[in-house]
Length: 432
Ligand code: AMP
Ligand code: GLY
Image (cartoon, rainbow, N blue to C red; front, side):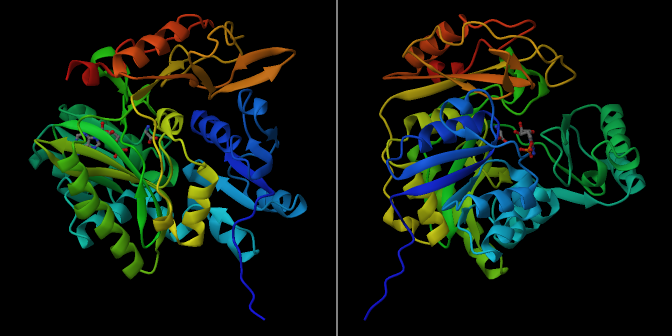
């Protein structure tokens, strides 16, 4: 008798971990899979509650998540944010015989440590900014005296998107080093820092799904990192995104696949930490040449919103193929045209902001756009703000200009105290 182990099933309970805009987009897409009988999300948000059952466990409480998955007989777990991945949720679930999508803790060091990431880039001979690593503040300060400005300073570990300073000002650079290494404003994440060469070009987010050896590219996307129009103001987690990104021409795409993604996956395998999951290369494209600024070990937020909006295949099939080691069997279908996400944020973000404001107009966009929730919760029949990035209004259309118009028409109908959003999302793509 021949036993065939089948790792895909048609009646599955799925647990999604996370509660931001990215996770709302993942939940929205997974909920369309005919193979999922029940979708849970921990901890979710007010929007995710419309498509999944909310589980009140925080995303980084990996032992409580394991206990829940065991109790509920979860067939597959999908992890959205980096923190539980860096903490080892994939290792923990796998050791307990549970199927899960994402990288192991060893592989997640690509995002958890910028020093590790840079070492992998050098080993794989991947183009990136020249850099130096420092583990004491005095040596870093001394180096500033001889360095060429502008330059970029990065805390080694996770810092909720705040651990990078791009500056032309030696005083500001010195203050950032003191804050990071001496005053520990990012805790142990600032024990080491990188100081690197400033690269000038256009950024793009290149995301693939890898299974350890092979990979399937997602469509291309571009994020808007700065808080205000014209790329002014402080860096944020991302104020809007669109897909596709015209800066990734077919020639650039080929270079990214052959000079960046493939050699990285080979190197990670050789180093004994093969990479499975979403691999996100943050690129700077200078005169048609892609350089890696960073790797993330998850989907981008807000890139996930326009990307999953355009994804026409079953997302569960893709994520399971990654965990099963056979992504080469998946040929994703993408909708034609473009899709755009405009993030609506709380006044003050990415600095201090107030929470708890009621949001009006959430159901006034009809079918023209989907309003993905990020920092929201439902209380007493109202939806309240709970985070810096609150909503991601996402629309698609045959052209990027039409998608932008639809997204802004919808954003204009939403109101909460202090809200703001950028008015120039995707302008680069329209002006090309
Ligand atoms: P990272 O978290 O390393 O991607 O850095 C956050 C943001 O800082 C990037 O999206 C870029 O906008 C900017 N940045 C990082 N590294 C560089 C660099 N070497 N040159 C220019 N800008 C950079
Ligand atoms: N949008 C940038 C990120 O997800 O890291």
